Length: 432
Image 1 (cartoon, rainbow, N blue to C red):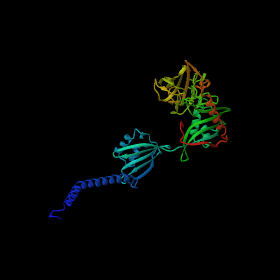
Image 2: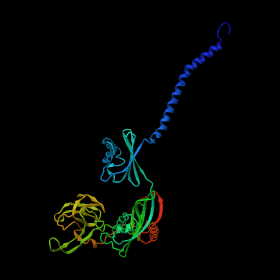
Image 3: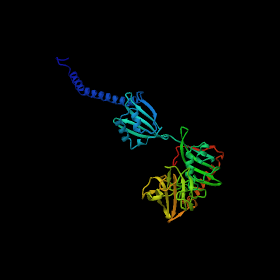
Image 4: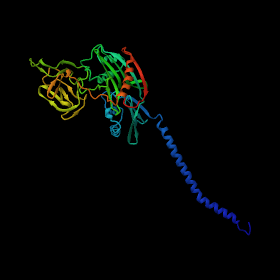
């Protein structure tokens, strides 16, 4: 020191340090607080999934009982009505829980305190519905299960019925319905399916984890009906339309189905101008065909058209009359229930009524009739015109598809009960 005064340099340094402390300390404090908040948020973000997967979530796995609604099932598992109503309404846009099916798998997920935090429901073998709680709301999404497609060749012989023949071949009875649907314009499987008939089919099978869950489209099939061979080939045209055709390119679909009933309907009376009436006890015309069928059997429209009458018609009982193109009309009589109304447009194969025993009737049956410009026709004697066949432009591609599919079909062993996988692929694109 000199002359008793502090060193000026030291004073200046001390002032700088003091000033820096006033400025830097709050800044350092703010930085430390920000770092602490960030660390807290990161800990919360990384910790949330760990907390969600801790074993405090209790899973209750079961199946929907027969005849139980979703609400009834949930109440039986301790879920209150307010929560159930909230779930149903908030997920309705994703899935209608009023459509839950008996025996379907369902898993409820609850907290240790019994609060519902989510559930999983099996819509079908290929889809699961997931519902999760987010506060007071429930959100849902549908998860698709990976499906493998196997194209299998199956053959069989009819000894009793087509359904039994398919089951004897080791296939599911669904295949019988698909074969009958494919050839329904050529064969009335109610009356024309004979012992000794044989079939072959190439069909897509859906597999989940190697287990069969259902069939897709038949790719090609043949049915030998009492020595007469019918064949059908699946073909996609350039406009995206899919239909079945004969090997010559003629459409299998006809303007009319071969029967207003699908299976197991015995013909008790045929078209006749001179039939003895079982109730009136005199000979008179019977201008239709009677099919014996239990009350409540489903009646299908044999052709697309419009309902011109649906109601009670005296001796005919409950009756539906449909008007079709080119002057044709069909009548369905003695019904127990009518499922369409006058003026309604119906499509070929649509269920329009249930069989019954109304009007002048000797028992449960369907009296089916067809008119052409007011004149009744013998439906079994009609030549049913086909829909449009393969166009000239599509012919080369059709021939290529025909040769490949018929070759595959011919290679399927004829021995009943033999199944051969022809092709396998995962999650194919296009129509299944």
